[in-house]
Length: 270
Ligand code: 2NE
Image (cartoon, rainbow, N blue to C red; front, side, top):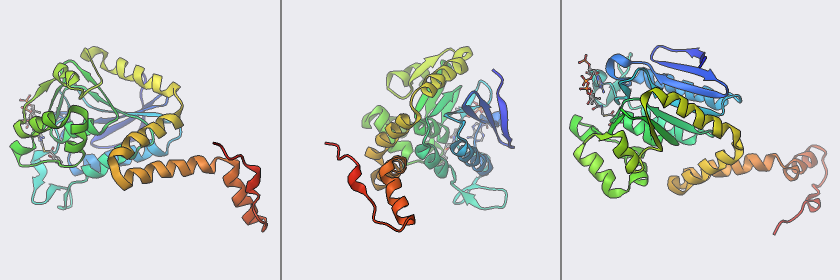
């Protein structure tokens, strides 16, 4: 598959192939742990994917065959967060969670090994997860002095149920890909050698579906869980669709033509 680079980064790769963008965490030496710079680059990459009209689906993965992501880089963890190059402690991965959550296109986690700690949360936040049979899943926060009480716990519980989510967090055990599939944590498990083929196949199917329909489904599924922010996102897309209607255009035209709008011409559907 001829992936073409969309932009060069230090810690990640952003590539494109037939309307699919692939974001790869590229720090295999530390099992693709993220430092603030990694996350800043991922945020930039996801913003590009959102803006680019030719991107219909986004894959998030890790470099190599050992890890998807092992969470925050423990080498740079300090007081108040993960210390960036200028000495500022950051938890900017939460901003990345929000980007994935509100991305108006499907985001697929392609889990190719360990998805641990904050790396596990990344796949939890993605819309779909396709995993290789060597993938291992788990939270480790309470073992290493951390936790994610946001999407990493409440949304996890939506996938696997409250009891299982508490088990995952309280015990910090690791789960095989098969166990993860059995508990509803991943959508599909395939042999490592087939991981990208299967993930791209899923992406290609979604690319044949109506982008607006997928977008509204994602907004609706989020809205139930995301309170006023979720309703705001759903409402934003309702406004987008209204702006595409003649009825909305009539209001704008009438204003510019300095006349009363004629809304009577539009049907009132039951
Ligand atoms: C992932 C895991 C279970 C793999 O174990 P194993 O035995 O297969 O490999 P090993 O030797 O532990 O790791 C390979 C290399 O990667 C580094 C290791 O230090 C090692 O390097 P060398 O000793 O060979 O030089 N590495 C792995 N994970 C790293 C990390 N997160 N930071 C820096 N270096 C890392 C095993 O490696 C493991 O348990 N990793 C730690 C997982 C973890 O606890 N992550 C942080 C959780 S907290 C978090 O991510 C977080 C949050 O809770 C809230 C907000 C934001 C972030």
